[in-house]
Length: 201
Image (cartoon, rainbow, N blue to C red):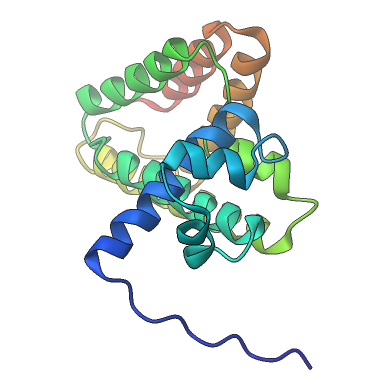
């Protein structure tokens, strides 16, 4: 039986900022270079911290990667929750934002959360579970907006917001991967527009 890991003391405000600085730097590097291509030394330099600071917050790369997964999940869910999908204007603004972000990066890196799932699902069960939870929360946030849209009569009454949210997220993931490979947002725009056109009242 493995010994239990002692709980870490609560972070000070400064400690929380330093840890967040490390995670943010790691998230950017991993999105640009992938998990295998990102080393702790790369992260240390990008975050501007010492080795002792880095290892104070993360015992190894696996722990840091899991923190990055949680960070990316929290970020996409937060952005989704602020998208106000409950109105046609909000839905269109969300669609335009997704396309604009993909166009700005030329598709590089793919989805910040989905790309992590692709890299970790078969090698790290804990990270895979974190990505799956992130997708679940993301889908819930989309569903909440779609339910509001339906309540206002802007979404067909026979559409299930839960199922549409899952479909829209799946379409988004697949089209972001194609955008990453093709370096062209045409598939992304077409896929999202088609799903929305089929669902709108």
